[in-house]
Length: 359
Image: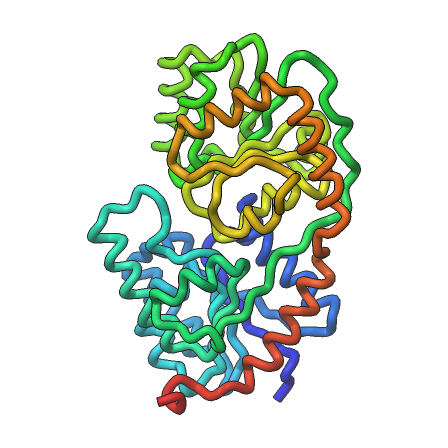
């Protein structure tokens, strides 16, 4: 048996421009560079609310995996197919990769959130080990009955990036890098900006406009109602070079997320030395430390507005935050470190007892 052979089950489009898929792509590439044979198995994009056909396909994929294979299942699928995992828990060495709990997604109906929470609880009980991308997610999984010794934190890495050039004009250039879905809080950001003098700021929102068409429709309607169409630009997804240019030209990253597993856009901003205004969720407080940005409670447009007003009114504050971000920039882990850590976790966790032997 090749202990450095991994079967990786991922739902949807691996090339999608989201933090979770970006993490998966970088981990796959990094493990292969370390000598792992990683085989990617695509599952239906309907997860975490799969159709009957999607579940049938997942059953066939898992059933076809070789005896005692080391299998990593992305949490977007793992938490939604507990019966599939339970059926193969003794035959395979199953692990789950959880970016954030499924039931934590913003905007879910209470009954659906409850169903997803119970489904994920059962699924995580069926795997030998759970990998998460932040200590905050590890703490969250206590509510799912997962013992701390069955969870390993492997935070994302960052790429070396050219530093931002700093503020260059009277108009504050704000950047938000996030898929337009409810939990990213674009609605809160628009409400916060509506009360600020329009001549003093511009906002560029970079992120998919196709993942949640209803959210995009609501955001566009809100922009029109608040009279912000001239100050706010929705670019959709952009390539890496264009995104780097946006980071370089910005004065402040604003990420008003209600929920985050990690906060990869924050890490990317800091890699450019760009200060951040965000919320106290996921790993964001740990990333920012005490001097690289401002934090407010999630879900509160008034607090977000007050923080933005401070940045507009206190030029010295933004300069101080930029210095803090430049300091953090030199301390961020890289992807090589992240992949080496995950490689060690996979080798160790694969030897743990299967669920039926844990008692």
